[in-house]
Image 1 (tube, one colour):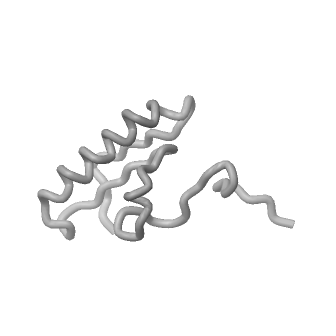
Image 2 (cartoon, one colour):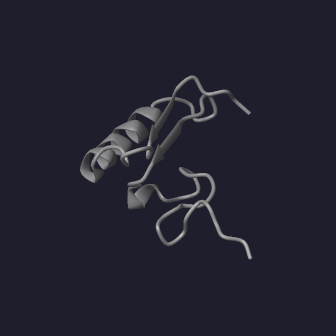
Image 3 (cartoon, one colour):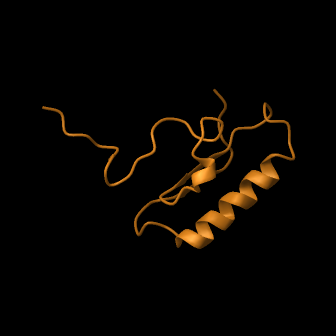
Length: 76
């Protein structure tokens, strides 16, 4: 496990920035990150507005949460 030096959480409180800006920022992050060896860093970014083309195992860890799949589940 690597300890991150920077974590950006864009899904807290008021739901962060608007979708268009969030998507643009995600594209920039991926473009810049691909310039470096992928085994040399860990990048953590959370968002409520994930770009569809980033919803792949190479970009995400765990489940994608939504109103229909909340992170907190009721257990009977």
